[in-house]
Each structure stands twice: as structure tokens, then as C-alpha cells.
View: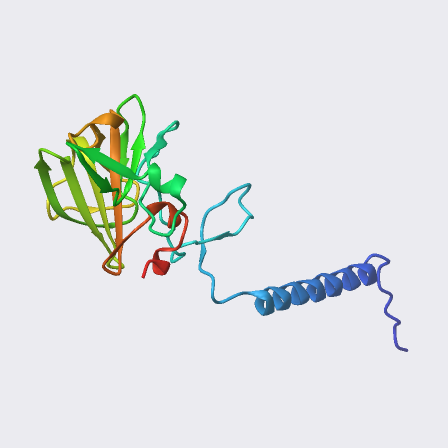
Length: 210
């Protein structure tokens, strides 16, 4: 005579529970695999907790910065724009020893000496000092554009130095050509062999400077 097998009451619910857990795990893994973006680089690290994924921003395009990071700096003399209005051109003329000159850059002024920084990564092409322009630094950037920082009281780089965006390269000062401005930075930007108004390029991508 065969004996009948009787399952204990908790066995069947346990089996169903295990099946449900296995099914949910399979669905979760499938969603994670199909939704992963292979164009992003995932790195270890957290922002809020240990379960928050962090996406690397390496490779994002660099934006052109201003040549200073001090609050309160203003424009003392504008870049001379041949297409500008008469009023705009009046504030972009340099007067020196009876001669009127068109300003080829922008003069940034502040009563106190402020740090001057590189607008992008690059290499120092030239460091010099002249009677009219004071101490100056010329930097060639990776995209071929050239930035010039004049009327410096101090210079903290040398020719051939590699500089990074935001690195301090000197401090503002005075010079004979801009003596009416007092403490200031004269800044010029050359793109594609042409001197341009720097104010039109701050915040643009480095690759747009061509």
C-alpha cells in the first residue's frame, strides 16, 4: 500500500516566493543591461549615497574664461570696433602724448591689484617688459588662438611654461600707455591671425575660436 506524501503548510508559499524573487531579479538585470549608455564613462564614487552612479565629464568642451576672477573688476576702456557706434568708439580711444590710438584690446580696471589668469590651457610664448606697456605675457593656446596680458605689476610664469586655464600668470598694474586708468589689465585676443574683441568670446567653446 502506497503512502501519501503531505507537504507542510509553509512549503508551497516559500516556493512561490522564491520564484517571484527570481523573476524580478531577471527583469531588473534585463532593464539595466538594455538601458546602459555605452557613450558615458561610469566611475566609482558617490554624490548622495553609495548607490548613486557618477558619470565622468572628462572630454567635455572647455569654455573660454575671463582673464581675472576677482569681484568688482570693470571695463575701463573698450576694444575699438570699426562697426561700433560713435559713442562706443569714444570709449575705445587711447590718448598718448598728443596721439590718438585705437584700442586693440580691453582694459579691465580695479582700484586694488588683482590676479591675472590664463583664459585657456596653453604655452607661454613670450614674457617681456616695455616702457609703454609694462610687463606682459603672451600665451598660445591649443587651438592656435593667442592671448596677451599687458600692464602687469608682477609675472609668475616664464617663456616655455605650460599653463592651465585659470592659472595665475601675474598681477595687474600700471603702464605709461594706460596711465589714465590707474591699476588695470590690458588684455588682447587674437583668433585666426586677427585681433578680436575678447568680450565676444567669453563663455564660448574652445573649438569655436577659429
